[in-house]
Image (cartoon, rainbow, N blue to C red):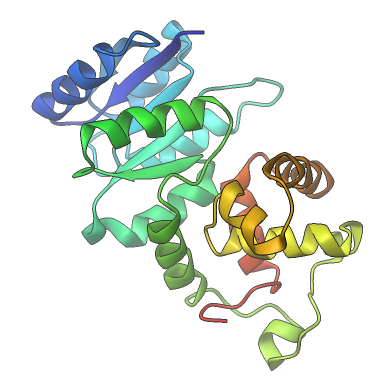
Length: 230
């Protein structure tokens, strides 16, 4: 299937550059561009892209607000949002993930990584750069208010009731997800097959009512299951 992509950035050269890279791939079609979040919402409604490459700092409406609106339409399976960011915008990344983004990509990433990221997000996965994801999530999780119970006191028991729905193995997989690890890395760590890991991830998302792996990572930290630096 062809992946339909909408490129959103307030810099025309950036939009065109990403568009040229993606448009050269046989399985990717750039269906449109937008220069701000408000225009992105209109373009997404008109063009029905599978993936939206979303910048953060833009006029009219920023990428975080646009991401939240794209992800908040009830009963509609909207596009996956891939946030474009740089390290000096780290404080915005966590907010974007909570708003519903499926992942993020550094703007200085090589072309092949951009192409790979779009394909991965379109396929329903989320964590694009595991090592960077781990770094960012831990940074922002450390700034979160500690939940009542174990996370606040340093105990080991999780504090979110939904975690009781998971099996012991699913909890282990969720902990691995929170470290930003890929299916292959989780499989190696737990001595199981990648297909088994994928099955566990699917069940975790279903039981916790989460959309994708990124939300699972955020949940793991916010629930107190995993603590920054642990």
